[in-house]
Image (spheres, one colour):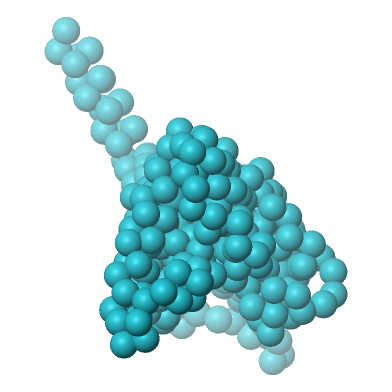
Amino acid sequence: MSASAPVRAGGRMTPRSSHGLRRHVRALAGGVLLLMGAVLLPLSLAAIRARAELTETDGYVAAVAPLAGNAAVQEAVVDDVTDAVMAHVRLDGLLKAVPRAERPAVRRHFTRGIRQFVEKQVRQVVTGRGFRTVWNGVHRTAHRTLDGRLAASGRSPVTLDLTPVVERVERQLSHNGMGLDLLRRVPRAGVEIVLLKAPDVPRIRAVYEVVRTGALLLPPAAALCLTGGLLLARRRRRALIWAGLGCAAAAGLLAAALALVRSRTLDALPAMVSRPAAGAYADALTGPLRTGVWLVIGAGTLTAALAAAGPPAVRALRARRSAARARS
C-alpha cells in the first residue's frame, strides 16, 4: 500500500485522511464563494444604479439633461406638443361661410397650414437656447412624482408634463405679435406623456422594493464572498485568476443582457412612440451602468492577467538581472 493511500484504523479515518477531507471541503467552499461573488458583483452594480435612477432626482436629471440637445428627442417633443395642440384646434367657426361641399377640402387646407405654423413655433422653442432649463424642470417634476408614487400607496399614473413647452410657444407668439389664439385652448392635461400607467404602478413599486433591498445587501455580500473565497483557497494565485475571469465573464453576461433587454423593449413599443428617441433615453439611463460593467470586465481581466504572470514573471526578471550582473 502506498504511503498516500487512505489509512483506516478500526474503521475510522486517520488524522492524515481527515486532514485531506478538510482541505477538499475548504477548497470546495472557497470555489463556491468565488463563484457567488463573481455573480453578485455585476448584480450589485445593476441594483445600485437602478436605485439611484429611482430615488435620486438630481442624478436622474443630470442623466437626461444631455437629451435636450438630441435631435431624435427634440423631434419627438415637437411631434408630441404639436399633436396635443392640434387636437384642440376647432375650425368650425371659420368654415361657416364656406359652402358645405367645399368644407372638407378647406378644412384639410387650413389644418395643414395651421399645423405647419404651430410645428415651426414649437421647433423654434425646442431647439432654442432656453429649452434645456425647461427640459430639466419637466423631468425634475416627473421624477419627484415617480418617487412619491413609489413611496406611497395608490395607482395614480406618472406623466411627463410638456405644458411648459407650450407656455414658451405661447409667449413667443405674443412677443411676435401673432394673433393666432390656438394655444390658449389647450388644457393642462392635454400635453402630457404617460410614463407609467396606473395599473403598472403596483408592479413597479414591488420592483422598487426589491431593488432598494438589493442595493443595500448585494455589494457587501459580493465583497464578503470574494474575500472569503480567496482566503479559503489553497492556491491563492490560481483562485485570484479564476475570480478575475469569473467577474469579467459575469459582467460580460450582464452587458449582453442589457443589450438584449434594450432591443426587446424598443421592438415592443407602440408605433406612435419614436424608437430613436426611446433608444436615446435608454442609453442615457443605462450609460453609467454600462460604463461600470466595462470597468469590471477590464479590472477582472487585468487582475487575472497580472496574477497569471505574477511570480513567474518576477522570477524571470530577477534571473535576467542576475545574469546581467554576472556578465558585467
